[in-house]
Image (cartoon, rainbow, N blue to C red; front, top):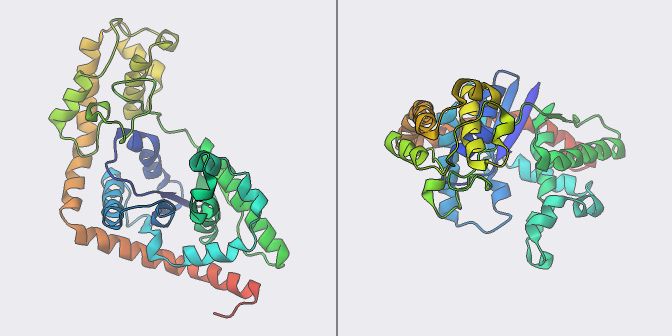
Length: 330
């Protein structure tokens, strides 16, 4: 079982990123051989300040390692250090079809009304996503609802390439649909996702927050006047209460009902301190390791270089065979 997944390097990661995706990645290391990459080639489909992008790659690598991604057990790298991603994407552009890409719903959402003004990369990036997983003969790719269509495209491209050139080159990756990560909402508005773009820093718990600030944010999180109910049905119409219960459940590996079995009937004056203590204890070692890594960018670069070398070696046979299948000399 070979698992491949990528994440765009954005700055200022928060609790929603950790509970929603990164925690699941950490668990995957026990399920199979894992390759995790920082999708910096995907990032440039829209404008990024070069210095900021470079810093974000390091920051994301530090965050993943601090949260539990082990570079000794998994291959951690950034795309730009493995040119085979871009090479294979170009080769696959000859197989992918405009009609397939036109049906990609994410492009329609991201391009908005002015499709003529967006980059070619934004239109074609699903082909790069296909290359990302086909290069390594991935057997499984973790996907959420918004990425299922892209994995189906990767399978279509692989099937057509294998058929057109009479080869058995590309493995058809299967979706890895485990338990979905927690959907963490804003601490100021339980109907909006926790986001780094929210102007209020009090709306989120950042991975860089210290213990006192985390406790303060939970203490000041928006709630209502009623106590916690005994059952999940009692959370209906109470988005802030539901959010805090969901955070507690995700941190402890419980279902929401399990949290209510323990804390039902309590007011937030009792529940918030319990949540704050749990969150502080969870985040403290992450922040400590994050601080260590951010203080030593050379260590991060060395980790990414080693990971990229391992990834390049792993993907090399597939790339060479793709050139061969197309009748190209390299």
